[in-house]
Length: 153
Image (cartoon, rainbow, N blue to C red; front, side, top):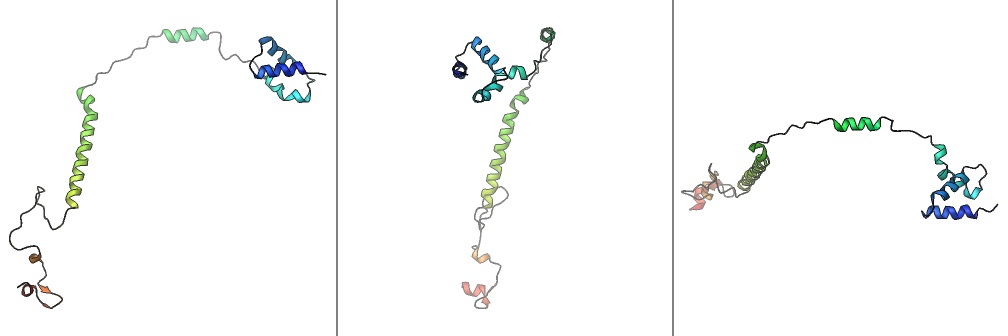
C-alpha cells in the first residue's frame, strides 16, 4: 500500500502547516493496528490522547471558590518609620569608615621607624641630651674589651 498522502501530511505537520481536519486524519491513521514499520516511530506522537486518561483538574465549583477568595477584604496595617530607622544605614556606614580610619592610623604608627618614640597623643617626643647611639645600654665595646665611653672620646 502507498502511504504518500500520510507522509505528505506528516511533512506538513512538522512544518506547522496542517489544519485541524488533517491532524484528525493523522490521529485516526495512527490509531489503527496495521501501520507500516517506517511510520511506527510516529505512532506515540499521535496516540497520546488515547494513552493518557482525561483528568479534570478543576472542579465545577472552582469559579465560585476563586471569587470567594478574591472578594474577601484584606487589611494591611501601615508601618511608621522613625528617623533613626531611616538613618540606620548611614550610621552603619559611618561606623565602618571610623573603624577603617582607626585601623589605618594604628598600622601607620606600628610600621614607622622604631627610633622615633611617640607619646600617648601620637606626637613625636622631643629628644634632649645625648643622641640615640650614646644611650646604648652596653657599657663595654665587645671587640676591644674596653669601656664604650673610652672609644667615643
